[in-house]
Length: 278
Image (cartoon, rainbow, N blue to C red):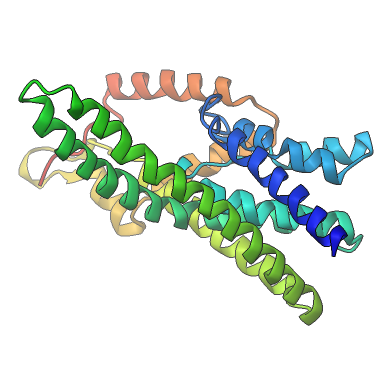
């Protein structure tokens, strides 16, 4: 009983450390891997406890330096599940470590939609409405109320997410291990993660070709021909070119500068342009 009580205290202390570190998730935000460095930094207390050998620790840190981005206030749910999966990996030699990043990738997109709606579209608007109404009357209490109404529930919910994520992750992984469903989870999570990345690529890469074939009213727009072949054909091509260049070892900064220069050049000569409003 004492051992169980001690284990619970140690786990709770570990989760508390992770929660405090999670507050710095976006301190090192960058356009290459976004919140990845903050994610790895947050996971360090758990990784140090689980992996005593330097090589294992290095592999775990590298694993969590993969691309990651979600609403920061809901990220603790993913942290909780990830800690549980790292514990399972430390216990089981047959654990597939690719599952960890697959589950992270599948959760970050879906939780971002929930988190953005809850925090940016609901809690922040309520806090802003109350705070602004008082601030416009010259009452400094409006600033304080805005800070409290937004941050107090946000912090409480974030801490709760971490606890739920860890508990759900632990029990869920135990059931998966005993039933042999881990491979199906990995496959399903990989598909969902690819769908999220594919959706982001289709919506975030926008191009329009203003070139025309022919003259006068009978001229045919090149963009309409491309749309008839396949909508989003050029964005898809750009995506695969960038993906191929990344596979060849080109740095993200180099590619960003290249896109910047080529985009300006092609727009200047009239190959690309702004899509006309309908």
